[in-house]
Length: 103
Image 1 (cartoon, rainbow, N blue to C red):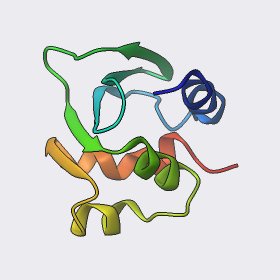
Image 2: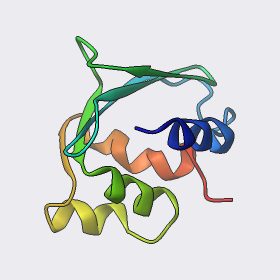
Image 3: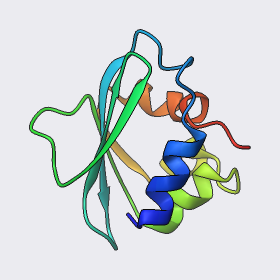
Protein backbone atom coordinates (compact mmCIF):
# COMPACT_ATOMS: atom_id res chain seq x y z
CA UNK A 1 0.00 0.00 0.00
CA UNK A 2 1.54 3.28 -1.03
CA UNK A 3 2.00 6.19 1.35
CA UNK A 4 -0.51 8.14 -0.78
CA UNK A 5 -3.13 5.42 -0.29
CA UNK A 6 -2.46 5.34 3.47
CA UNK A 7 -2.76 9.14 3.62
CA UNK A 8 -6.03 8.98 1.71
CA UNK A 9 -7.42 6.34 4.08
CA UNK A 10 -6.51 8.46 7.09
CA UNK A 11 -8.05 11.60 5.55
CA UNK A 12 -11.29 9.82 4.63
CA UNK A 13 -11.64 7.93 7.92
CA UNK A 14 -14.95 8.71 9.65
CA UNK A 15 -14.21 8.53 13.38
CA UNK A 16 -17.90 8.86 14.22
CA UNK A 17 -18.78 5.77 12.14
CA UNK A 18 -16.05 3.86 14.01
CA UNK A 19 -17.25 4.86 17.48
CA UNK A 20 -17.48 1.75 19.65
CA UNK A 21 -15.84 -0.44 16.98
CA UNK A 22 -12.82 -2.60 17.85
CA UNK A 23 -11.79 -4.47 14.71
CA UNK A 24 -8.72 -5.44 12.68
CA UNK A 25 -8.99 -5.30 8.88
CA UNK A 26 -6.17 -7.31 7.24
CA UNK A 27 -5.35 -6.54 3.61
CA UNK A 28 -3.39 -9.01 1.49
CA UNK A 29 -2.45 -7.42 -1.82
CA UNK A 30 -1.57 -9.52 -4.83
CA UNK A 31 0.74 -6.77 -6.10
CA UNK A 32 1.95 -5.02 -2.90
CA UNK A 33 2.89 -5.70 0.72
CA UNK A 34 0.37 -6.74 3.36
CA UNK A 35 -1.14 -4.11 5.64
CA UNK A 36 -3.72 -4.05 8.38
CA UNK A 37 -5.98 -1.39 9.82
CA UNK A 38 -6.69 -1.19 13.53
CA UNK A 39 -10.04 0.52 14.14
CA UNK A 40 -10.43 1.17 17.86
CA UNK A 41 -13.35 3.25 19.10
CA UNK A 42 -13.06 6.07 16.60
CA UNK A 43 -9.32 5.84 15.97
CA UNK A 44 -7.42 4.41 13.01
CA UNK A 45 -3.91 2.99 12.84
CA UNK A 46 -2.37 1.60 9.65
CA UNK A 47 0.39 -1.00 9.99
CA UNK A 48 2.55 -2.86 7.52
CA UNK A 49 2.63 -6.65 7.69
CA UNK A 50 0.27 -9.28 9.00
CA UNK A 51 -1.80 -9.25 12.20
CA UNK A 52 -1.97 -12.44 14.30
CA UNK A 53 -5.74 -12.39 14.73
CA UNK A 54 -7.58 -10.10 12.30
CA UNK A 55 -11.36 -9.68 12.43
CA UNK A 56 -11.53 -9.99 8.64
CA UNK A 57 -8.93 -10.67 5.95
CA UNK A 58 -9.35 -9.21 2.48
CA UNK A 59 -7.29 -10.30 -0.53
CA UNK A 60 -7.23 -8.18 -3.69
CA UNK A 61 -5.01 -6.10 -5.92
CA UNK A 62 -4.17 -2.56 -4.87
CA UNK A 63 -6.06 -1.38 -7.99
CA UNK A 64 -9.22 -3.13 -6.76
CA UNK A 65 -8.92 -1.38 -3.38
CA UNK A 66 -8.45 1.98 -5.13
CA UNK A 67 -11.55 1.33 -7.24
CA UNK A 68 -13.63 0.37 -4.21
CA UNK A 69 -12.44 3.38 -2.22
CA UNK A 70 -13.15 5.88 -5.00
CA UNK A 71 -16.51 4.34 -5.85
CA UNK A 72 -15.59 3.02 -9.30
CA UNK A 73 -15.89 -0.60 -8.17
CA UNK A 74 -18.75 -1.98 -6.08
CA UNK A 75 -17.29 -4.06 -3.24
CA UNK A 76 -20.00 -6.71 -3.48
CA UNK A 77 -19.48 -6.99 -7.24
CA UNK A 78 -15.73 -7.36 -6.69
CA UNK A 79 -16.43 -10.14 -4.19
CA UNK A 80 -18.90 -11.93 -6.49
CA UNK A 81 -16.53 -11.76 -9.46
CA UNK A 82 -13.51 -13.01 -7.48
CA UNK A 83 -11.55 -9.73 -7.54
CA UNK A 84 -11.94 -9.58 -3.76
CA UNK A 85 -11.68 -12.55 -1.41
CA UNK A 86 -12.66 -12.30 2.23
CA UNK A 87 -12.32 -14.60 5.25
CA UNK A 88 -13.30 -14.14 8.88
CA UNK A 89 -16.12 -11.74 9.73
CA UNK A 90 -16.99 -11.01 6.10
CA UNK A 91 -19.82 -8.67 7.10
CA UNK A 92 -17.22 -6.22 8.41
CA UNK A 93 -16.04 -5.70 4.85
CA UNK A 94 -19.41 -4.13 4.07
CA UNK A 95 -18.66 -1.43 6.66
CA UNK A 96 -15.58 -0.12 4.83
CA UNK A 97 -17.72 2.31 2.79
CA UNK A 98 -19.14 3.88 5.96
CA UNK A 99 -15.73 3.99 7.65
CA UNK A 100 -14.09 5.56 4.58
CA UNK A 101 -16.83 7.50 2.80
CA UNK A 102 -16.04 8.99 -0.58
CA UNK A 103 -15.44 12.70 -0.50
